[in-house]
Length: 67
Image (cartoon, rainbow, N blue to C red; front, side):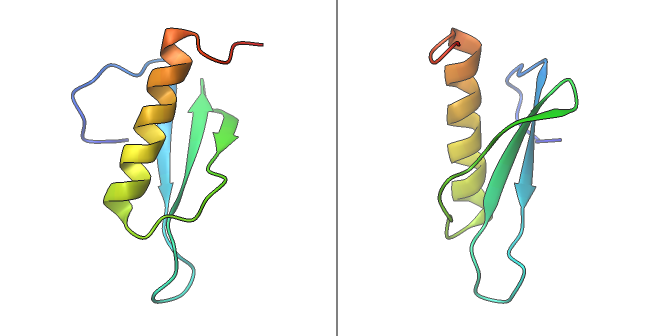
């Protein structure tokens, strides 16, 4: 899980490392263990992937984009 102090329950953020050296990072968001979203962009660093993923979780927690 992430080392952030913000409460993101029931979501969890998984940072997916590049498959090859010099590749890009991605993220996946799970709700109660079930895949909810994946990043649609490749990100240049783990920090950027984490920032992007947490931003998306904040949107989910605030109800933006509810179906």
